[in-house]
Each structure stands twice: as structure tokens, then as C-alpha cells.
Image (cartoon, rainbow, N blue to C red; front, side, top):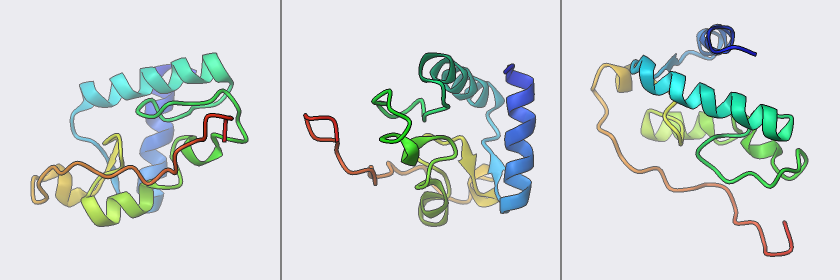
Length: 111
């Protein structure tokens, strides 16, 4: 998958969900490169801001868009990595805050 195609897919996803892609297009493309790299590496687009295990089943919660993104956007105006944001965030009406990791830590045994 190429960057432009993935960008289009996520644009449509955002329109359906009522949020936007981050207005910093250079940053967005950096994240998309990470998603594409993870898809090549693992066979799925795991969040580039989190450590993937390599197991689709164990990482199902962090396949982009991750299951935490909707709550993060509601609470902080953006998802954990900042790919998906609210309109207010893009307009500078919501200040940038560190989002606490919602994902439970994997055990040393792998989950």
C-alpha cells in the first residue's frame, strides 16, 4: 500500500467518524510510513507509537485505528499517536496533553 492510498482511506474513515486527520500533513505521513512498515513487518498495521508483539491476536487492540482512539479523541482531542484528532484540536482550541497509555502492559511471557 502506498502513502497516498492509505491517506485517502483514513480521510474517509475520519469523515465517517466525525473527526479529522492531524493538520500537520508531514507528521501524518511519518505515521503512515510507520503503519506501512509495520504492515510489511507483521502483516498488519499496528500503531507505530506502541510496541507490537508480532502476534495479530495479541496486538488486535493496537491495529490502526486502535480500539483506544475514540475515547482518547473524546477526552484529549486526539488519539495516542496524534494521527486522528478532533476539529477543535486541529483549530488549536484544545491544548496538547500527554495521553496516558490505556493499553495494559504485556507480561514477560508475552501476554
